[in-house]
Length: 95
Image (cartoon, rainbow, N blue to C red; front, side, top):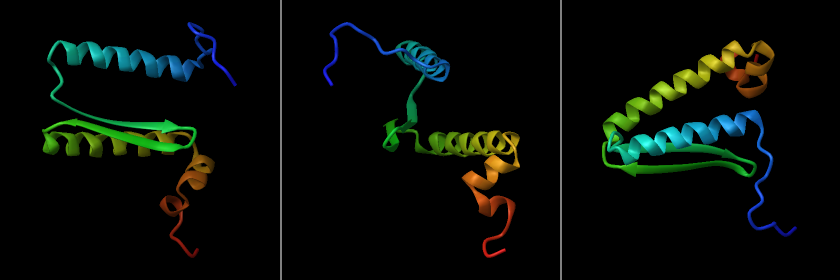
């Protein structure tokens, strides 16, 4: 399928939110407020990751904070979602 030059695909509300976060992050980086960055992108083919900068300790703490946010969002989505995403969190394996 060929792409039309200058045409932009219609974005979902989630994708628009992602673009807004990226724009805000870029603005902060251009102001010199960001010295290390880790990105996890969920693509149709699977996850992709990128790391830039040298402050590994701060990045590691940030990743732990992000993992906690993801876990809490999963639990708030409901037990059915949690069981589908990570069944071992709700019930021990083998039960």
